[in-house]
Image (cartoon, rainbow, N blue to C red; front, side):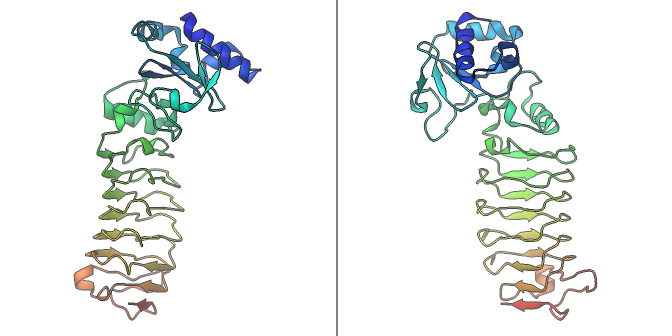
Length: 287
């Protein structure tokens, strides 16, 4: 390994105290910035990548290492520096295009799907630039349990993650989303309050007990069939043309003025004991 990078590792080791070089080299945490390029430390310390790392050093630029406590260390002085002086990163956490985000994809099946999408294979790093401009992502039937890393798909407009093993999804950073289909998962919570551009939302067949769509006023299609909802408020969603909230335990539906017009809205009000498409099934419809 190049001595310049190794000295960075040793600086971090002095701060961490008990970490050995061999253990450090196998750890996914941490990163090193060389000029305008960013590498995962495990990747940078892998001898098979030494040519790439050496080339980055030859091209010039300062070298900074981020330790496990989130401190940035100037490789030349060995001192902790403010994030604002590090190329591509500032105090608000903005990252550069060449930041290695491979370790952020904690689910191996999701990571494999991303590799396939961007045309790379492991152990090549997944960089921020590889995913940040992707608009459509379909990971249906990929046996995924976590979508950690989805936050880097900041331009995403369509996400299909149907028939996986998800219990939660964080799409708070995917503010450009207009289409979200997370049907057939085991979701217990779903927060779409930041996704105000959504026009299509399907969370059919999950385990949701609440669903807040009050901020999603652009919605035209909402399918929350077969969950555990007891109430639903779509009074703010005046653009709706399709609503299916069947097979829940809904006793109160806060609806727009003509939501009970089943022929227009394809509304189904059902639970395990009541079926139908009208508002006379023991459900209070408040307009």
